[in-house]
Every structure is written in C-alpha cells, then in structure tokens.
Amino acid sequence: MASTADPVERSGPLTASERRTYELGRRSYERGDVKGALAQFGRLLRTRRGFADVHYMMGTLLERRDDHELALQSLREALRINPGYTEAMLALASIYERQGDYERSQEMAERALRTASPAAGALDATTRGKLANLHAQLGDAYRDAGDLPEAIDAYRKALDRCPKFHDIRNRLGVALREAGLPDRALAEFRRVLRGNPDYLDAAVQLGLTLYTLGRANEALEQWRAVLEKDAARDDARMYLRLVRGAANPGETPPES
Image 1 (cartoon, one colour):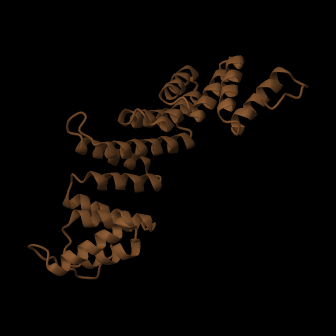
Image 2 (cartoon, one colour):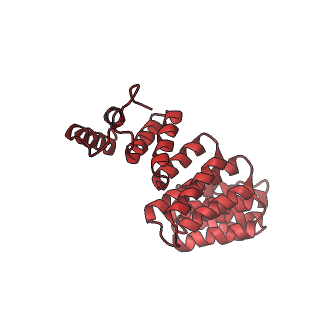
C-alpha cells in the first residue's frame, strides 16, 4: 500500500491538517486524478489507518493504475475495518474477475448481494446494476472457456438483478443457442425485442436462430426488417446473402 514505514495510528477526531488532506484526496479522486489522490490518501494513512473508505478509494485508484496486488490489499483492509462494505466487495469481485479467478469473483459478488440485501428488494439500483454486470462478465468468461451451462447460469443471475438489461439477455440468448437450446434462445430474443423493438443485435440473432431451426423464410424476413431499419447492418446483409445463396446455388443473390 502507498504509505511510509512504521505508521502511527492516532485516535480521536481528525486534525485540521488531516481533514484538509482527506478533502484534497477526495476531490482528486472525484475528478479522476489518480496520482494526486493516491498522494493525499497515502499521506493520511500514515496516521489514520482506520478509515475504510480511504482504503476503498485507494484500492480503486490502484486498480486503475493496474497495481492489482496493492489494490487487493487496500480493498481487503477496507473490508477488515468494515465487513459490510458492499462497494469494496464489488471492487474485489471485479479484480478477481480480471485476474481470471472466476470462482472467487462469484463468491465475492454473492457476498455483496447478501450483505446489501438482507430483505428482498433492499438493493439500490446502482448496486443491482453493478452486480448484474459482474455476473454478465462471469458469463462472458465462462462462454469464452466453452462452459455454456455456467455461462447461462451467470447471465440468468445477472438478469435476476436487472431484467431490463437487454444486452445481457441478448448474450443469454446466444449462449442458449450455442448450448443446443434454440427454442429457449428464441424466447429470450423476442423478450428483448418486446422491450426494445430497435435493439437490432437481438433481431439479427433472432433471424440466425430461426435459420438454425430450419425456418429460413422467417429468418430472411427478420433480416430484411433489420435492413429496413438500418441499411448499414452488414451482419444482416451477410446472412441474407448466405442463406439465399444456399437456397439458390449458382445464382448471384441481390444485396437486399
């Protein structure tokens, strides 16, 4: 952690100098001045090591600087001081995920959920969103590793937190199709489009899923509809061309 050797912990209220150091560090933190905030908080921690929020902010700053081991030390110290510090848990989960430690990341995210939500519905929208995105990141990692059941489970957990995160539901649909569950994938893509008819990524994926089910005409209609909304969608145009070419070998299909 960024501090000098042999720190001496003071007790009692902050001195005027310490309060000024904290305020300067906080302002630097809020405007994204990593170097300045680290310097101020490091100075404060020489005499005041018992402030969980300072350790938390130090941890997030160190993560931005890619000093992951030091960031982990700071965030763990924040949790030692305040075992219920939800934001520190989420930050730890994020670093574990970046390091590829998906199991520990998942455990920390679930711990944050249990801590922040002793009763159903107690989570604020910001925390729900952070948890949902952490679960989605885990889902992406599992999918990249070829573990589709775990990916699907992680995406579903994300959507339990934030059912209206259409991008995550779209990724769930893709994972379901890749897992050999195209009918379930269709349901997810259609749910996305009911919530947002202009979410064209889901519309393209819906067409692709229809095609895998042998419903080529419906797939073609879906991709045509996408191109009517956005003529620059090269993926929809490519699928149209390929499916028409497969249906009419030897012919040169029109672009749209």
